[in-house]
Image (tube, rainbow, N blue to C red; front, side):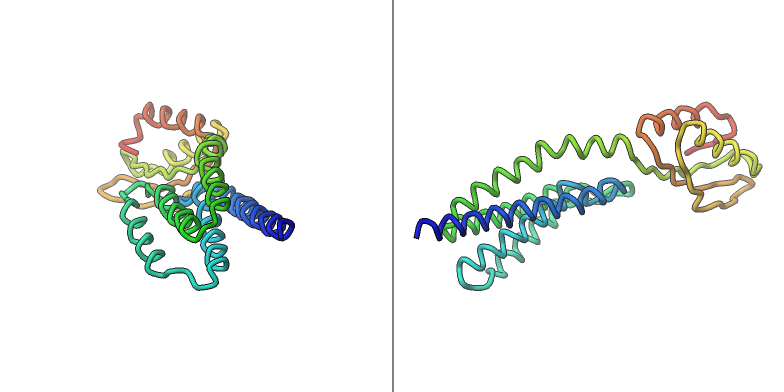
Length: 210
């Protein structure tokens, strides 16, 4: 019997490790593209799903849908959206996986609960450094620039400055209002280079606002 229990424990470790790896790979892609649900959030969601499934299998019954639904409402309550960004997704994921760990404890799967807790803390603390690094070297920013006139040469000058700052750009919209041209440009590159672009735009007299 001890060997059987050891085999089950190994299977548990393989499952949760694979959940972290798979979630991490998908999370890296999302983080690289500056999506709201990034590296740590996707890992926690994948890991939480794995734990819920393992607990249900151990209990020999389906997951208590009332618990999952209730935790979903709580998680949604900590997500906030403004005109610029969405915040609170990682906190919502932590609430969700905390419920999964609680269910593990309630069903008597103490080892699974402890290992999952340690992994969650590692995702939140250690992987945060990698998330910050990705955000530093590859960042997307939408510039909405309003020029003082409708001279198209102004836009060409801005695009040239973007290239000189080792950034890439894509003009997504150009409009004209009250004799002034307004353009929306997606800029991609290193965070420091984008900050330099901000400074250059502030110094351009033809730029009315951005």
